[in-house]
Length: 152
Image (cartoon, rainbow, N blue to C red):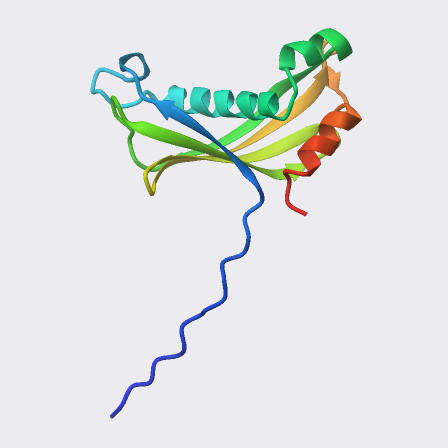
């Protein structure tokens, strides 16, 4: 009997939407008593990456608040802790926009060490009128810039 293998799938992988990579080094202050990154610090790493992405796109959250009264707030987080990071690890936070709404942005974020995925999160950020504490549309120039980074 002769077994025939099906041909290997040679199609290239589906293109990923553009993303942003932010390097993070694990310091002593990031770890718990066992020397493992404290669970809440993964969220801090992701927050920094989103902030730096906006900054690189030419937008300051402080300036947005001062000039338009708008702020970004976390609406929801769904997080999976896959493997631990430890003291002195060199990590990368990989952030992608999964969905861009009128007044919200849904991010997919991963924290990786080399080729290992340590952490994954889906984070929804809402744009709010800070005085009224109500959702508000993002400024058109910011939404246009972000739409270039979101999947079609």
